[in-house]
Length: 515
Image 1 (cartoon, rainbow, N blue to C red):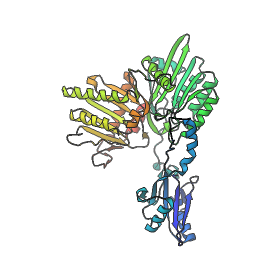
Image 2: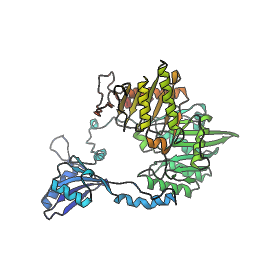
Image 3: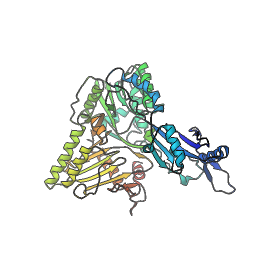
């Protein structure tokens, strides 16, 4: 599965498969007589010598197999044990795609189809080289022009020199913007909680953590220190099941209360709750993010995290964990949007409010930044808002099923996408609300799965300074003419590259603004 092979056809119709090892570099530097550099794919060296050996040409092919675990019944028996038993089957799942060299001869292709038990609908014709992620290991060659300028994460201005992080949060809500802000602030927050004598309880949701997770290690330490540690681990996070199970077992062994996946629903929220009691003054803290508790991806994904001691937020985050701990069936929240309970209905009300305002002749607008927009009901409502004159500005990095700029349907909707050195992963939702703008951040895209089939948490931004900061970041991205692509009805999705006062991308400008 996902491995890179070369395949050749012998005269007796037998096939020869040669796996290109993932443990070696795909690139080899060839010595030259001058100062130039010459790089060759290992693929081409193999093809040359294989042809000499077997008297036939070889072509690249990569197979993707069905990664579903196919649990017979999530609602009966031990779901965790069923996942453990199903994991070994993944590598032999049914072929769902065969990416081939488009120059592969028809006879060889038919032989491949027969051997892999696939048909033409499973075939994707590509170039001679696959697995372009291997370019992460391209030789440096001593040429700085081949690489992005180094942008080391900066220390958070408000938190970098604070001796007691809890007091800093007591004084003011804190916003972290990754990968621009250093993830050390998050690690420091959790590690401090693990050893702080006044911290009594830590509750957290883990969806994807790194193999050597500092976050998980801090939670182990907290449990060892006698703190009440509750960890909800989503074992159905695709491709991270084994790692999540590993950390769950280790946390349990050290005294943490670990709960695992719900049948039929994923827990995708990125939340943390801490209780602290100093001098008989109990205070609660909440962390709500758009990205996972993963210090590795935090260096390449753009995400936002809010840390607050505002009781309006912390009391409702506690309800989320009571739901996860099966102590509460239905959360009743006024501030937080929680899928699958209130996210869809609240967003629908917010859109309908903009429609009412526009029909009254008032200024009405909606600005949304997310990974994907797929849910048909939400898209229809945005079309309805468009027809009512609401100004709609969307920043969608990936899937966008809304078709913009169609007369009578979406002429007031502009959609752009940013593809740059960091993966855009943060989510911001803004509604004009008659001059009293409402802003939210959270873990949910507007996909049916996020709105109806996952537990997601979205928080309002109540701090004016943070709202101002997020708005500035969003404005930079909405006006990115360097790395911004215009999503259009024809799906051309071309980079804007229009005349601009700045030759810098929004990501670089955001980084500069945080220095």
